[in-house]
Amino acid sequence: MNIRHTWEKFKPYLSSGFNYWRSADKEKYVIQDSLGPFFGMRLQDRLEDGHYDLFDEEGLPVRLHNKETYRSWSTIFSYSFARYEQYLQTGNKDHLIPMRNTFKHIVESGVRTDYNGLVFPHHNILSAMNQGEALSVIARLYEVDKDEKLLEVVPAILHPYSVNVKDGGVRGQFLNHPKISWFEELAELPGKHILNGMNYSLLGLYEIHKATNQFPKAEELFNEGITNLKKALPLFDNGYWSNYWFDDVAPHYIASVMYHNLHIRQLEYFAAVLNDDVLSRYRDLFIRYQQNPVNRIKAGITIFKSKIG
Image: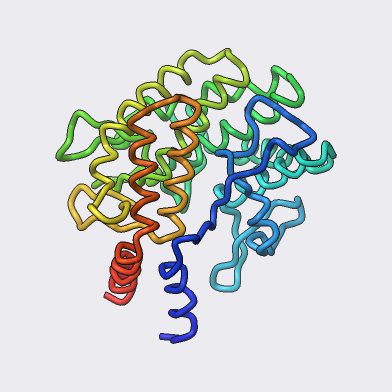
């Protein structure tokens, strides 16, 4: 194991000020729309730190694995959100080109299910996170264009939220907590219920309803999902840090400092737009965990052990 690489990975656990996901300063934006930057975060940071370094002939970001490039839905979506933020900052519609290309990719490369859903698999595994991010892309383009044709695929993207994982959808359930349903980032059995992926899936539902006011099913699913999120949050609190996933059968997996920071930002956003005390309480709890040096070091050691174990 490379000692320098390991040290660089561990250093963020030594600082209470680690802030990989920063809040956007949206008051300074030229364009003030109803949705704003994705989850209220400054995704332009990912452009500036070189997160997107390879692109294909259509201008979509790609990833490299075993010397071959491939398209990742989550990478494509997040890049379009970062460029949309640049549009909000400047008013320059050239920054919308990646999002328009992303919508084209949604329509042309999304996979139709036998129940007439439209899904965006990750390595052949369905993902509610990708469903939500696709909805967030469409919501933003609709904000700009008000083109009803953009919305034609929305019912098909919503459909998998109502279909159980075993039947080819993204709706899961906690094995030992059967009253909690979950929109699964990894729609497989047994379940690994991922917190940030659930939140991404919920944001898409919230935004497509807010931008269009045309999809009562999205609002219904969002309200149901928020209720289940609040029921499940105690399961993601391990007493000193947040869990990345809650596993039905195997040990739960602790969040890295980057994902713990993301959990805080996501809960912060939902707590603000919903004025919700439960979400605010867990946001504040996770912030206190991050500010505690003992908790940070314990989390870092736990992560390190899991990587080498």
